[in-house]
Image (cartoon, rainbow, N blue to C red; front, side, top):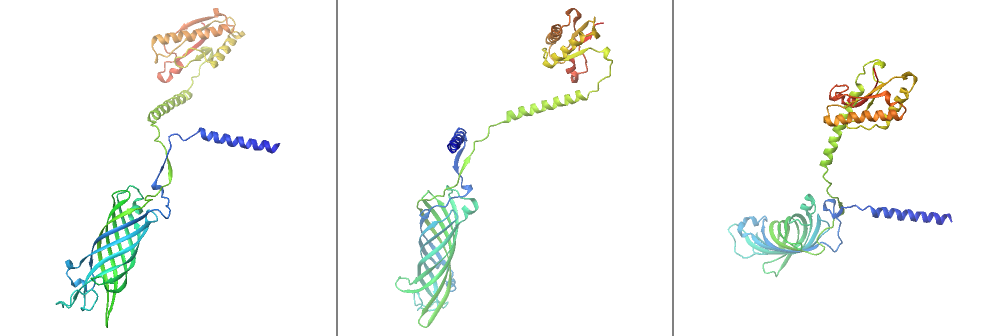
Length: 399
């Protein structure tokens, strides 16, 4: 029985907690993806792309530099498939082709165009280099500036390697297979979510080795090329970002803040007035020469507070004691002349003194022992700092 009761209580607590949570939604809060908080990596089949490019290259080989610069330009192209593993890091692989124009020591070397001997001792060559390559890529824009799905321009650097098969001008004779290293920067411009145009500036280094009969030719080529390319991006193309709450702008509270400041200033003023009132020196007077009692009122108030009612009742008890037997009393109503109009102050004086008299009579003081007086002046007349003492009813022995 006890176990069943405990289980029912636990269920009730759980349901109650769920109800409270449902009753207190975060009103006005929306949830959006925020790339500044990072990105979520996609699946392996996402973020693939294919790039086709075409352009021109210029050969800076040791012998080729003796050939006119304008005569060293040659076409180049490439076709790649690749994937971005994150907004910053990616890779691509494909086939690269370029024609190299250079010079050779003799007519028997690969790519020699003519057997004509040049005055400088070289023979013109022209070879076709084609082979597989692989590049590692870093998107500098996303790295330095953060990922943004709608960014138009991206700068990407890459380094890679591969191998070129060297063929002569008519693509018939395969003479060599040489390694290559390469590096470059891709300036890409997104024209849509699927398509981007690019300008690829690349440096390539080729280790050229050729054996012809008894002759050996070993020369490292340095090549600079520029390509215009077009890239198509397969789905999924973008990167998801963490979902974060966005809270509404807070309400403008300037008006409330100003009211609070004014209230604080008023409190400061009242505290200063209170301290001055408490620290004000009290003149030593003979009790017999002063009023029997003084009842004070807040500004604009004529009704007796509960505390003042107890004071008046105590005064009535004294009036009815043997010490004051046969004595009459004068009740004087006061109001400060620094606030309110004359008509208001006259009414306040009359109501205040009338209220005190009525309460004395109700507590056993004979009405014929009481007379009422009003004074249109200030009881203390000490200036605005002492107006609280001017709002009163005094009870004095009649002379």
